[in-house]
Length: 86
Image 1 (spheres, one colour):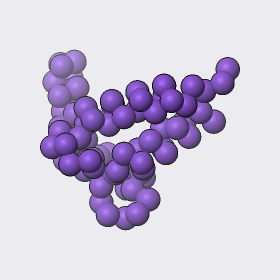
Image 2: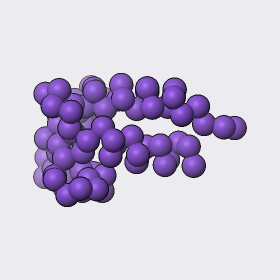
Image 3: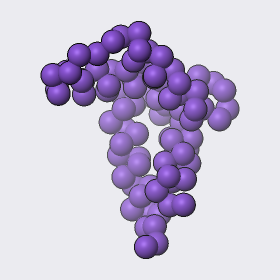
Image 4: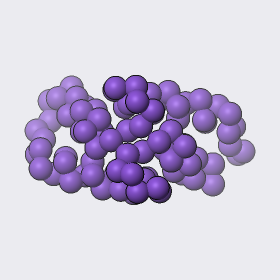
């Protein structure tokens, strides 16, 4: 099945905007942590703050291709598109 790139990019942008709480155009580890904490809370799951901090930092590091400690929409889109359209 072929990937509908336009549809995928629109959905990726919507997901990015949900995480980009301050609407800066970038996602940082703090914003990722906020989303994860909300998720765990909504599921009634315990969460280890130090572990989440580590996971969020690793997420940003993995996607941050220009080493500015934040993830741009392009970096986020490029990463996700590799997963869904390859």
